[in-house]
Length: 344
Image (tube, rainbow, N blue to C red):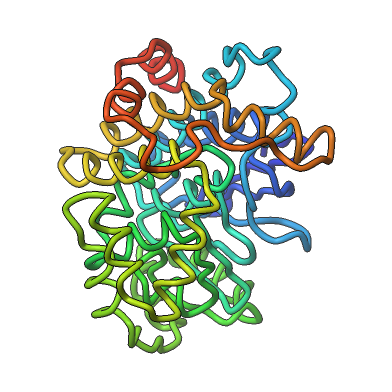
């Protein structure tokens, strides 16, 4: 067994277990998770990996926002290194030769979503809460969002990305962000069964799964969010007049215009890439640049450090964001190949 203050990695039977005990996915956790995964990748004694949390805090509720806000003196160097290592961890998971089961019990945001989206099977409980709130702080969804979100049904991915809508419990499964819903009170029983019979993990998960109701608003989401351009999407929301459209439009107008435009383009490009690793690199390029851009820098200093109202976004509206501004974010950015190589 290997451990750090916030990560316990051990082997039980033929199962490699990673237990997380901190809500923020910082570099210590990223390094420990990557190291454990690489170590077990070719170990014949390990046939299944199980990722969950230890203690009462619940699953990972985000990345190291304070670290991103306070490190690197605003030049983005530390932030790019952080994103490179985080994305490389998810790349290792996405290409893993053995099944990974992630139990996302509790708030699962930011980096926690990376540990969930890249798993072969993700377990949600009635306590699971998922949301993509990155554009509200000047970022775009990363840790595999550019791969997973465009592959959700219809306009679901863009709706979640731009509206910041929170999904809870069975909704997480119904929308395609988790595979099975299991009652939280049965998790220990499920984990024990997986350790005892890892080869039967899919049948075991099916046996523990609860029924989930299908969404009733899918046609409405598709009508509003399956659009050829961001301008057309906003026009559709403005013309609709319904509650879902109004709430989504309000969230979009409150978010960073540059991040909204970048996220729309990211999902468009993510739908066409051939692998999760290619999508992860696109995310790295964007957030590696947005970390030192006006919007996140201003938001993080005000909201996290000074505890004051954040400054106005720049550009101030989506209509003021130029195509060249967005295209520049997608240019190749150094550090990605090195992070992949270091992760093994």
